[in-house]
Length: 438
Image (cartoon, rainbow, N blue to C red; front, top):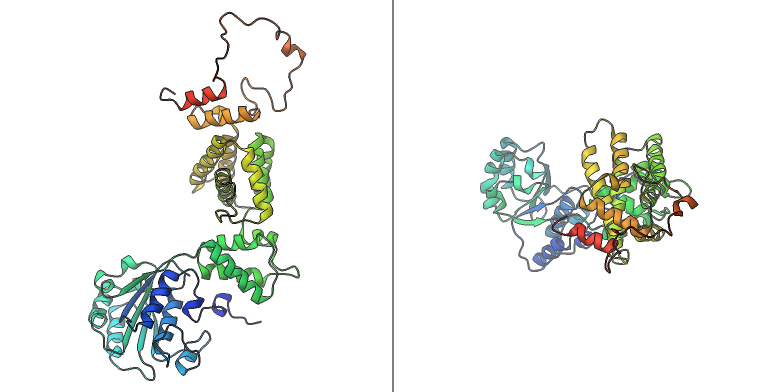
């Protein structure tokens, strides 16, 4: 097995192999077909989404013996030099602007740029991290970028296009790259794992995609780390959660069920397990917020998994559907709001465990708050028949009234007690809470 990093081993060699960037690759290929190639390009976008790779592919298309062509032949000397593991071409110069962004470097580039290519059709400069070029360096390049000789092409790649001075941007064709959609990235990672011949357990790829946050390179690096540590069973879900620091799904199920039933004992036991197992409380709250987000979507869109709104294995989706049906709408929304606010408060907190326990207490005790969302959550619990956690004037969990509680059941109601009119009960209370005079 090659020791080359996974993202280098599977780096695309043509525009057809670039994933998730059709809004960039299609116009570029059409420009090559029409032979309307500009002298300068600006590729911008988040890290790891294919900017530098696309710049190399464009250089390959321009210098192919059959080119300019959208599909390099892969057989000529230029294509072999610029291949995935090729030696490189003397006529395609890659410059890291982070270490060569000064005015002297720009002057040196300008002086060498006017010499023709050694053996290719064009001399191409790929300037990576272009936002690191100083304003003086850009000004030194301005004339040659504005009116280059026929044999010269520039490709700027940057994550911060706003830092490239306007006079340079106005002379380039700007193509903004985007983060790759999770579904596309998951399918691509599945293909890579199939080529590597290593088994992947269900639920692993969604975690890898989440860790990569839409970046192909970051996702491939995470996948490479997991494949390197895979055992005889391949990459397992438990191994992935432990290595990436994600919360085990059983802990999330336990705390969500504790919220549904109002069981404070179970909720705080989960908190203790999170701390004792060495998990980061902030990561747990982040994962809990992700779970509540999925439940909110499932409550609103029961077939969210089929529509691609939720990315999870089938058994996890089934459990979440049961959890979403167990919650009331107001109760679920309130829980998500409280967890979201708690996550913000945890940043910089000196006692994250205390913050986590307070978050659970706020979710479990809507009776302690008088705001509208708490009242609506209490009404949801009343309609579901769930008792509140024990408090002042409230019976303990599991309390069953004895015969003495019904001693006066047959007594007539006081004359001041009016019967509940039609349309009363929880529905009327809910309308009163929403009314302007609440």
